Image 1: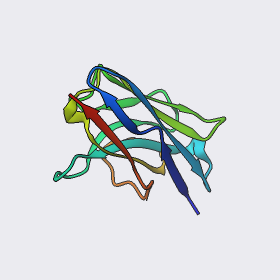
Image 2: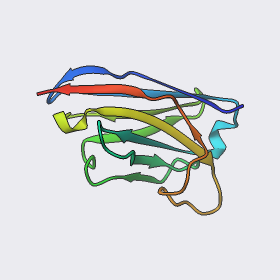
Image 3: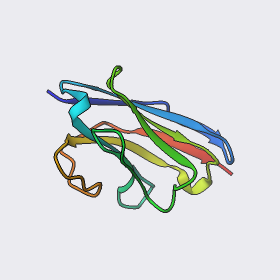
Image 4: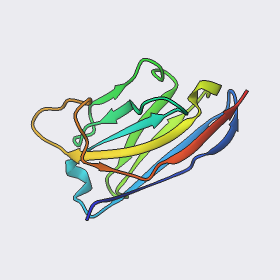
Length: 124
């Protein structure tokens, strides 16, 4: 079955950086669209960034554009989220998600598979 395992979360000071990783198994990774979501305390989960299975297309929420970068390494079955210039409001549980890629791409689609999440805490 499809499994996604996030890592790389932790405590960081405002202005610092973290890189999250999401290792996927049980799927042909290169044919799956990947995404990162986050859920701050007391708020709904929201889409942050997505990358198409072909790798040439990416999407970013306005809140992270210019600070976060999504990338993928198909040889390692892993998607990354490089987070720079972190702010206190970036504090959240970060989730990796995936869905089978298709001929069209809609980053806001419903994702069928999710990781367990990794906590990111940014101290101000």
